[in-house]
Length: 234
Image (cartoon, rainbow, N blue to C red; front, side):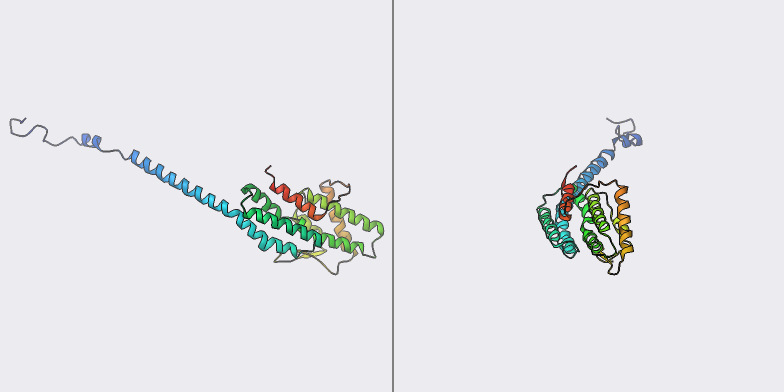
């Protein structure tokens, strides 16, 4: 149909507002793209997390075999305790290789092994022997010294003794190797240093109200208790 002038109806300029209303909105398209990207990101993060967790046990096992086990094997612990602890660590490394431990267990074990005062206990046994052989100590003093060291081991077994407190007690009686962090008893310590060590250890035991009952566990037994606590899922 034509107008009197001959122009077709509807062929004239269109309303700009009508054109805008006919445009496809970009909002839904952007939302779809965002959702897709978010899903991809979640998949990538989940994959990376799974990969890292899967490798965590292997890395922990490597650290035990290459660092901690040699450290223990060269420590001042008694030979029997060293052998038992090395066996326990070797079994633990095998469990880590097989991914039998949860991330929580690995984390708990890492904290306990990194700051373990138990693995330094060889220097405590050594200073106890030094006091026992001192001619300046009476029999009663030697007995009291030994009982206090046992009480201190109980404190450590209860997870109360920190590495800082251990080093503080040995401040005048031992030195710390820069590379290994191992405490080495001084060769020239005298009775005064031994008595000061005993006084500090006794103060730490009193601080934590550690029982004075006899403590008949060995260092390796206390270490096993620490490992079992780390493996618990509490």
